[in-house]
Amino acid sequence: MNPVPPALTPRERLVVALDVPSAGEALAMARRLAGRVGMLKVGLELFCAEGPAFVRELQKECPVFLDLKLHDIPTTVRRALEAVLKLDPRLVNVHVQGGPAMLEAAVEAVRAHRRAGGRTELLAVTVLTSLDREALAALGHACRPGDLALAYAKLAAEAGCDGVVCSAWEAAAVREACGEGFSRLTPGIRPTGAALQDQARVMTPAQALREGATWLVVGRPITHAEDPAAAAEAILAEMEA
Image (cartoon, rainbow, N blue to C red; front, side, top):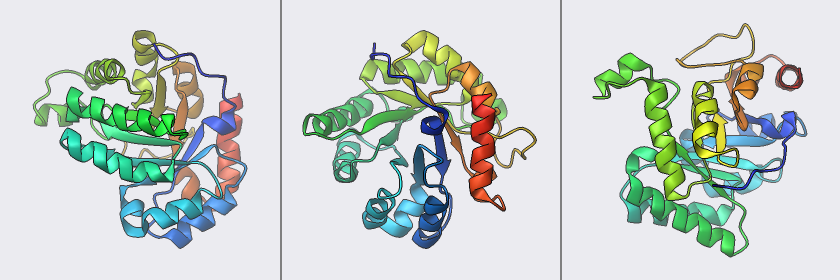
């Protein structure tokens, strides 16, 4: 079992997804949110468009979660991680579906990085929050999303990952099965009254915290708001309540 981490403040728990197309927009958003959020998430689109130099610039404003969802053969994933770990992001992730050998290769890369003084933690993606039971059935999975996510979380824990990316609906079950020290990062967070957009399994910030989420990822409800800083503050108020 991973050790129980120190308690986090609401601000430290809030991760904002920078789902914008350019470095300029991302940096402008980061500066507007400075001091209000704990981490900024850089996804595959933005990383491919702007690259490592942009991430280094962004890290001057806030710690970064590199949401690359690596999924390939073990050697390829390990080498890809060795490359991105030079940036020393706060978090990085891989897909559980790559299998035990791939997860172990990823863990090996991250642990070597930490032995050299890095701080990056490794998360494993379980079931995307855009997938519901019908979508999983089309992929050949007869079980419910929550059951599959829990099975994947156990596999990630056994491989030595630091935590998982899962829906807030699975956070409590993952905490129960894998321990408080096994982190749960939950996308699909929508403040009360917000549109669901392309998410299928969502929760409000307060609900997600009650279910045991470690970090909450919020994107468009903040980044597309007329006043992103005010939107972030409103979500923090929901979390604190």
